Structure formats: C-alpha cells, structure tokens
Image (cartoon, rainbow, N blue to C red; front, side):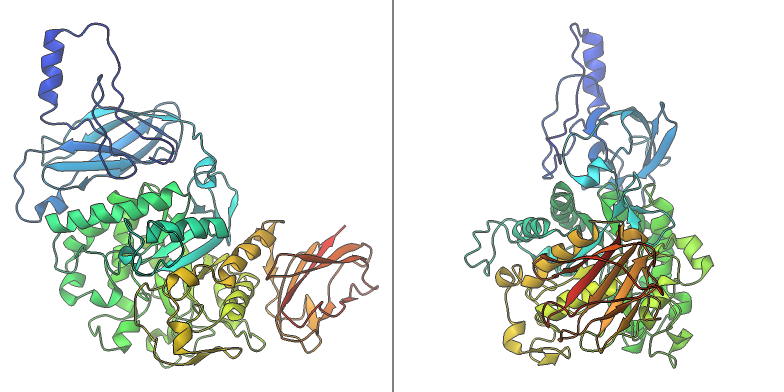
Length: 601
C-alpha cells in the first residue's frame, strides 16, 4: 500500500493440530486470505490465523471474500454485502459496503480512522458464503510524512474552508484531468518528448506534487467501464481494476482525488434516471470501491441545474427533479466516511447558488442551484460548491458571483475556470486564482492544454481572447509535455505557499465594498482578518495602487509587496496609518500584478 505492502498477517503457532489444520484448509473455500497491494496485485497468503489484517491509520486495506453462489447476469451488483468495523477501545463503528470484484470474489476496502484493533463482522443476508465472517484489522500509527495520513482525510467543519480530520485547514489546489483514464499508465505515450517519463500519468502526478498541488480533479471520461447500459458485467469490473491504479497512485502521493461519478452528464438516459434500483446500486458500488481513498465526490459534469436540457441532450428533467440529486442521496447513504460531496456546476453565467450574479433570469429557477434548498442539502449531504467561474482579469471584477457563494455558508471552490493555453495564458491563469481566493473561495482548480482534456479536440481550431492575451490554435495545440511546465502551474504553488504563511482561513473578502481598500485607478480584490492582516491583489497592468482603510490608528504594521510570479518579497517596512486608520500605499514595484501584504505588529 502507501507505506509498504499490506499483507494478511497470520499468527505463528508453535503447534498446529491436524484437526485445526483441516478446519483452516476448509475455510479457504469460502474465504480468501490475500490482501491487495497498492498496485492491485494480490500478495501471497502468509501462515497464521484467518481474518486478520494489518495496515496503518487512514491507509486502505482490501479484505477479499469468496462466494460460491450462482448469480444471474449483472446480479452481483445488487448483492447486499457489508462489513461493520468496530474499535472496542473508542466505540467507533463504521459500516462499509463491499463490492463485486469479478468471478466469485467480493472485496471490502477499509481505511481505519483510528489506531487499535478493529473487529469486523460481515452481513450478506442472501449469500451464506459472505455472511457472518469475522476478523480483525490492526491499525498502527501512520509512519510516513504525507499530510493527508498524518492529519486524516479532508472534511468540512461548518466553516468556509476544508480541514483535515484533526482540524488543520486544508488549502484546495486542484489540477484538472477530465480524460485521466486515457493518460498512459504503463508507458510514456506518444507525446512525452524529452521528459524522460516512463508513465505519462505518473509523471504529471509527480510534477504536480512538486509544484504544490493538493487535489486531482477527474471525470469518468475515457474509462472502459460502461455503466450507461444499465448493468455491471465482468468487462466493467476489469475496467474498474485498471481504474483503481489511478486512485491508488494518487493516494500514494498524498493527493486528494476530487472524482466525478459514473459517466459524463449528458449520458444520463431517461431509462437510467428512472431506474432508482440501478442508480442506488452503482452509487453503492462507487462508494464501496473508492471511499477508503482520500477522495471528494463531484457528481458528473455540469450536472447541477439543467445545462444539458438547454442543449437538447436531456428533455426529461430540470432543476426540480434532477436525477443527480438522487445519486448524491445514495452516495451519502452508503459513505460511512462522509467524504465532501458536491455537484460540478454549470458556468456561473447559467447557475450560481441563488442565481445572483448569473445572467440566467429567464431560465428555469432563475439560475438557482438544484442543491440550493435545505431539504436537498439534508438528503444528499451536499456540503460544498464546485463552481465554474471565470473572473474578469482585464477589468475590475464586480464580485457579484463570489458574494453569492460566500453568503451560502458552504465551502466554495472555483473548480473550473479558464484553462491555460485554451482560453487564457499564464497571466490570466495566475490572476483568476488570486482573484477567486481573495473573493472568498477556499481553493481553485487549475487546468492546462492537453492536460485538462488529454488528446482531445475541444475548441482547438478557434482563436480565443481573455481580454489580456490572444490564444491561437497553435497555442492550443501545445502538448502535455510542455504544458506541465507552464509558469502558471508553478505559480499556483507560489500562491498556496503565500497563503499558508498566515491564518488564510480567517480572511474575509471585501467584495469591493470600500471597507478595506480605495483604489487609485487600479483593479483589485482585497480581504482581511479584522484589522490585523490585509491582503490586496492589484492586477491592472500599471503601477497604480491605492489606500488601505479601516486600520488600527494606534498600531504599526509591517508592509511588503509580494510577487505572485516568483514568490519574492519586496519590503516596504514598518508603516503607521493616519488618525482615520488610512494608509496610502506606494506604487507597485512594477506594472505587473502584485500583492500588498500588511500585518499588524
């Protein structure tokens, strides 16, 4: 697994009677002793007691079981098979669904959330081969250095940001891979160039970790598992086993995987939408297969509200009876870990939270999210927003969209914006991340050419412009081996490191209300922690700045400029506001975008 291989450990005995040995051998017919390694290859059985597994806290271990029951075509999907894990020392109990893994094999994938000996007992009322199996999972403290396992899986805590299980704030910095399953796993692929990659997928993962990303964003585009035909068969399971490798490698590298479920949104047919038994079964299967990894659920693509209805792909539902809300309800029902759950939204011109800031006043529900109501939130466990906002990088952003997300109470991530070398270039990709983060979003999703949609052809033949730069078809044809090194990718990590220098999670955005900053012909976004800390991002291509407001007139502040391209700091020095709490900032060091940072002494 993530920190050494996890094997089924068998207690050594000095003497083993023939009778005990016969019982042991007979039990092999109904129970498989091998636990899966992180690469999906089963380890060799070890000598000792059946039903005992070892792992470290937060690290998934597979418990395989064998059934001799004869199932009809696709009926394994509906097998009710669960294992309840209980830590007697703390009383913590988690019921984890099991999943069919081909032929007669069923698996329960479990990640212990606490140290100690966890007792487990299986329940399969319709399959005696799977029912009533007991054993232990021994969880020792995590011994590695990855934050996600030292601190525990990411969750929400009723605040405006994500946290690790121990309460430490988690900065969401995502990289977009909608066609992840087409990224070559065992080879460099045809576009690796001079990278020296031996695996296309692993090379990018390793590079993004180096650059400071914390999240991978994926869609089920490109998977060979076909769940749109209303069944799960052996070929689908074989595809899922291939897909597992991607999840496992991301987990090994300590990344959170914001993964979308099942299939592309427009592939939701009327027959599947109305087959709640099937929807529940595949929701349960997805949770069983992946909830033990560090994941977030993001539900299809542009599934919130009714984007594909407008495109005439789906005329059978709208925001009021959106079947993806039902999928969310089922995922929430079976997910014992309570992973963060969202629904990938449409562009904010169509849908925000309440519709405020959108241009969708003539649409059904006025652009309001299908997950807006308290009732839907309670049923589905929806607790964060995966927004698709492209803020104005060439003028003063109005912040109307951002204010709508901030006032919702849930965590909001600017999950999808302009992709570098598709609809923006390095400057715009950098600027939109700073604008979003200082406008109340608790993180961003970044994307780059031939990485956001590997080997795709979407919008490659047009010329685009973000108001700052022109993006030509030649720019859009950039392959991943060059795109992975874009300056804006490295600059995302620069931004993350800046915010993590102080209590960024306590920042409150100003939304250009004039309480924090008065610009002097400058474009800006600003946020503060009371009158203790001020962060003002100035992004107009000029040296203009402005005045900081609302400061403590009786105290001094340390002031500096921060370069979002290089991470370098230019000290201004100790300053003191006037009697009204106002301080006039000097000009920026250059006409590029800069961050003004003030900290009360």
